[in-house]
Length: 150
Image (cartoon, rainbow, N blue to C red; front, side, top):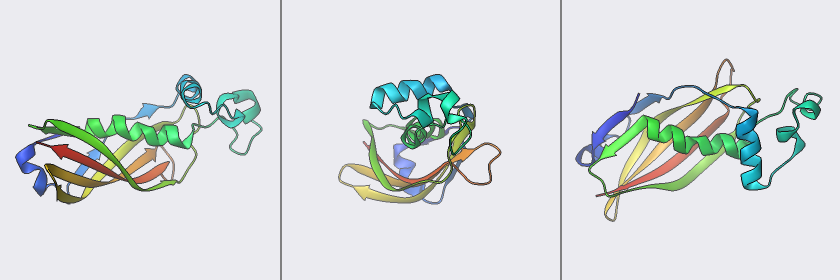
């Protein structure tokens, strides 16, 4: 569910739990397209037959593929109206906690940890967890930085 706020209300978002996105299945096609885009064709990702005998028992998504989904998921969680520019400013901390097997489903939950004024706008520091359906540990934890300019 998307939280929609006006730019004038961004300063008050610190501590806001934005909830979770819908689940998204990680397909072999998505993994293969990411491999093509990044020139990372390691067999653990793109050879499901060989990967069955690998350390995870199946092909797995690239860690950076799973992390990159934070961009898609972020837009599902928060919409700030009345801005001229929205910027993905970066990440402070990232951990790839659990491998994501092809066929698994992931989603992201987020908590706005901090809001700070920056020249011309606000920066949100957001604790993001990319969850792995049915797993005891998440796939990725990251602290994202997002800027909104009026």
